[in-house]
Structure formats: C-alpha cells, structure tokens
Length: 497
Image 1 (tube, rainbow, N blue to C red):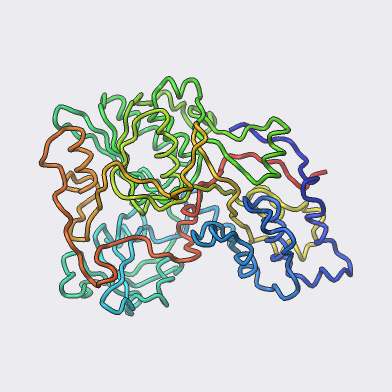
Image 2 (cartoon, rainbow, N blue to C red):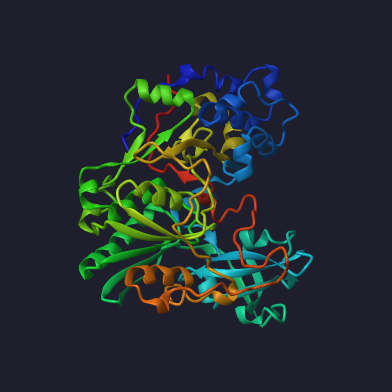
C-alpha cells in the first residue's frame, strides 16, 4: 500500500487535542481517557458523524463504558471496535507472541439448563504450556481449578496466568464428560506461528497441497513462503486452504498469502487486491492529496519478506475451507481472490466481518496512530494514557470490482458442508475430515472421500452440535478477530502543524 506521508489533517477536525491543555478550564473534570476515546472516534471512526457532539461529561468516568456508548449499532452488534488498557498485550497478540497457554478452543453449553459449558480443544501450538502439558485436539475441558465451567469463571480461560484444567475426551459425551485427568498450566510468552500444518496428498492422480492456517500474522509471512516453496517444488496441481478456525488478522498477511496463490500474471502486474472506504473526511483528504486507498497483489516488504512470485503457485482455482468460525482477513482473502480465480468455498457461511481497523494510541506512534502531540500533554496525563489504546473500525473493504458483502454480511459456501458434531471430528489433515474430504472428492471424483451425512452430538435442545464461538467480550488472546487489521498503513502524525 502506498505510504501516507502527508502531515496535516488537523484542519478537518479542529481543536481535537485542545481539551488536554493544562489550565483551569472546567473540561479538566472530564476523564482524560474518556476524552481520548471521543477524540479518536470523532477523528478516525468509520461512523465519525454519529460521534460528533457527544463529548464526555464529568459523569463519564468509566472510559470503556463511555467508549462503547458511542459505537454505531452495527458495530455493537458485531463487537468489532474495542478499547483496552493493556496496549502491550494487544501488540503482542497482533505480532503472534502473546502471553498465553497455547491452545484454541470451542465452547459448548452442557445440559438442558445451559448453565455449564465445555471447552473443546481445536488445536494446540507446539512448544507452549498446553503442548508440554499434553493438551491435544479433541480434549474436552470440563473444569477450571476444580470447578465446572460457567459464564462466571469462563474468563479464566482467556486471562488467567495459571490454571488447573480438568480434562475429559470426545468419546465421553454419553457420560457427561467426566474428568479423566488434570493438568496444571502456567501462561508465558509464546510463539504462535499460524502455519500450523501442511501436507501434500497424492490421490486420484493429483498432487494436492493442504495448508491449515490459524491466523493472519504478517510476522510469519516467511513461514508461508517456505511452505509454498515446498508446494511449488513438488509440482502440486491443487491447493486446499483450511481457514475453518481462522479469526483473521493483518491485511499484510492476507495480501502476501493471496500473492502466493493468485495467477502469476496478476501478481506480477500488481493488480488491485482490495480498496478501502473510510469516513467522508479521510476519504476526501486522501483523494485530494493523491493518496491511494487500495492495496495490490505482489506488494511485499523486501527487508522482511521474499518476493512472493518466487513461490507463487500460479493457480486458476483454490479450495477454501471456511465456516462460521472464519472471520475478518479469512473472508477478505476468500472474497478478494474471486475476481482473479475460481474460489471454491467449502463449509458454512462465514462469521461476517467485512470491516477494517487500526490501532490508535494517545501519543506514541510506536504503538499505533498517535492522536495527540506528546509535547502538549502533561506528565500526569501521559502516565494516565500510557497503557490505553483503541481499535476502532475505520473502513469497509471492497474487491477490485468495488464490491463488498456488507449485505448479507457473510460469505455463503459453494458447497454447504458442516464440520459436524464432536463425534465427527478427526485430526487436522485427516482425509476423513468432512470439509477436507469434500475438497478431495471434488478434485479427484473419488466417492470414498465425500462426507456421508452429519453425525449428531446432542447435549441439549438449544445446542445440538458443537458450534464456535460463543461471544466473549475482551478476549485478549485473539484481538485480531474483530476486523481486518491495517498493519502496514503508514499514516501521518495527525497532530503535527
């Protein structure tokens, strides 16, 4: 994406930092973080016109409560924009090095009252506390610290530094998943390389490449390059990209992955991959100053990445496994590849996040877009604001033909195949998997891979199959799932004059 180097946009939003001046003005009674929330949203928010005139009052002393009160109704319904007082954890999550236990899980209500939950392990990252503790896919977490999982203690799975997990397994549904073993886990800083599993199948006279990709994290584009280089060297005929649990992430990773998949000629000519529509003020400023609002295939950072053309598969068709647990950059990749190649979507309709965001920090550009001039802030205000940041929705993306999917708000599959109940789950990459099997059947025509029916996993009338996710606010281990992250968008310091 073209670097945005123009310095001044303050004229569009006059006096957005004037309230931070140190004097006896009554505005000093207003919570400084609430004021940051207002100024950031009125400046960058996609629905900025709805925020205007709703400045905080001395009563708005809870910054999070005030922030969420300003959000657009669609934004609230989808839980897209958020604010945090732990900017370090936010950036660690974005970069793939969070402090965490190292596994991803699905949640399921248990029993007719739905008061208890189970957490089913979807996958585990290697060399993490969970991996070292023997946690594996299909484990069923029944208890946390000796207590059944409920909505009251569920947050510990996201936030606790240490846990004792009571674990059952997928075969014990009829007995109510009794605890069969316990494991003590302590969170630490881990590495979450999203290129978790890959393989080449030689079936039906075809070489079929398979990649299970867990999140769009640009810091691991080198892993994508390595895997696709091996696919290319093997002369693969087809690609199955598994995004079934992928909650999205950075546009830089989506662009790079697409550049490894799309027809070589489109990547070489740097064809438009996506375009962004911001609020009317930002659109006008960018357009008047000749600042591009599109991103292109084939663009990469030569200081960190190899040219994707070197590993490009030059495909005309790709099979993408995506479900209602696929969001954000997963949907962007699926949608924005369609103008250039046949995309066969296998699974269910996607989660529905067609928006983009970036991080806004009060004054430190190292943490995101800096809102205030640091020299205009008192030391007290700097200390108060230091750990805060917001991730507001700033844009809606479109493909190269200027189309989006805000209506209906999700992507519908070409082949509607559910992963099925827990008793249908197998290991990642197993050809008996319902979604992967459907892809192999379409590629080879061999009926033995085609999924047969849907097995039931009935725990309650209201939740007859394993579904993910239940909404849980402020889940810090997966902050990127809220929207496409504009990670390499180089904005000016808007406070400069």
